[in-house]
Image (cartoon, rainbow, N blue to C red; front, side):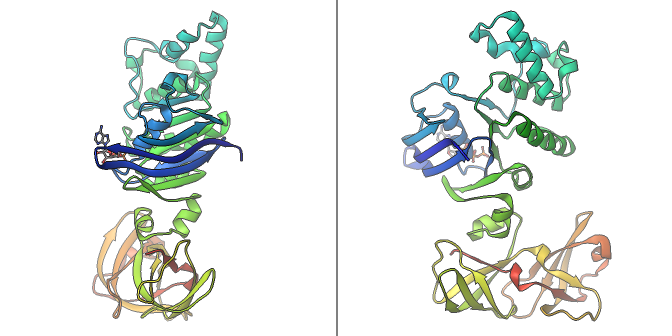
Length: 360
Ligand SMILES: Nc1ncnc2c1ncn2[C@@H]1O[C@H](COP(=O)(O)OP(=O)(O)OP(=O)(O)O)[C@@H](O)[C@H]1O
């Protein structure tokens, strides 16, 4: 994949506070890339630095082979869609979309064609003459997208563009955003604190904490092989446990746990043992309820101490003697997990392959 954005050792200091701390990152042409992290982690600062609305204290940002440090936003091959997508209320849809084109001084037919194309891309072709005040939230968001796309940027920057929409509409717009990106084929960089949004939309995700990038990977990789406890926890929650290291090779650890027995796990990049121990994790949905006396190669015995109902699934909190903390179990309600009473004894099955070792 050709490189579109190359970020090298970018820091952004506010006094002694580092909003960005030596961030390096490459984003490919045509990639749907997400910056994911909790509030204050620096993701918006990084996006604004790519757009040119913020200037790094040090480091370099190259877009399509050229350093853009010192280049104002309107001279960069980027366009940004903001969270509160301020569209002009006194202009109609077409006029809103055409607004940024004015400075290009295109001839009238070319301008009309580009506006028409952009409106078709966001499926607003029929609403060109509508006033901006006569649109739903989702339609307004599409106008904001069309207004950015009409400029034909190489990179579209999206700052939590769907956060103002209600859940159902947000989910619909997520699907649209993904197909829009596939159709236009340009690089999209999305800032979000919503792990599901990042997992569902992106080719790759960078997870950020405290001004630094903790991990960059595909959604599946980052979910299944988080490098650190923080990343694992931010993306969906995980049960952690301490394990004694009994053997170590280049890519693998042999460990012994109190309740999950002896297992072999992949060694995460940059792993360092602590007092001969490693931290292991297992996702709540990788622990499955055993409903009868079925034999399972790997199982645990425990007692349900709490239960939370979420419609299609139930979260069970299960006390397993010998575990430091009760286990969190996520089970589908297809088989009646929502009917298991608090206090009931329970057997859980797991696949040892579901255990992962975490760095630190
Ligand atoms: N002008 C500023 N002066 C001082 N500190 C700032 C300034 N702008 C941002 N910060 C700090 O930099 C850090 C990163 O901010 P940023 O907006 O990038 O975070 P974020 O991850 O996008 O968070 P959110 O999701 O809440 O927008 C925050 O702790 C913020 O308080």
